[in-house]
Image (cartoon, rainbow, N blue to C red; front, side, top):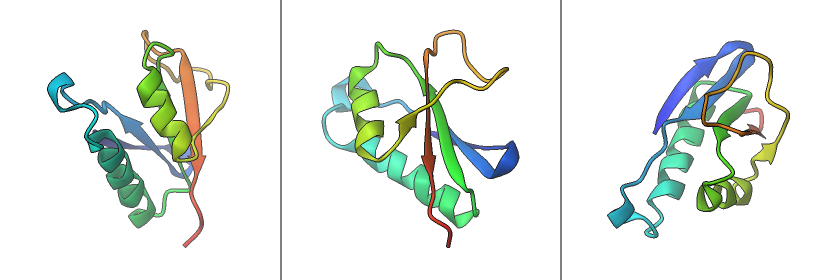
Length: 92
């Protein structure tokens, strides 16, 4: 998992991956929570991510943590991504 600072006080959750043989053990959730904690420690106002509709378990994880789908901003996206999500962080 990577946390990439973005303009406007956002932090991007990127490159989250769990090896197939390790999936189903809660590692994706723990990695995501670590990125959220990192973002909060750095006073980010929101966490953003892109994903794919093909990654149903990942999307279910993000939704369970409060991420909401939004229209993708112009110029922000990856060739294989067709989902853009945001999670507003609570102020400290």
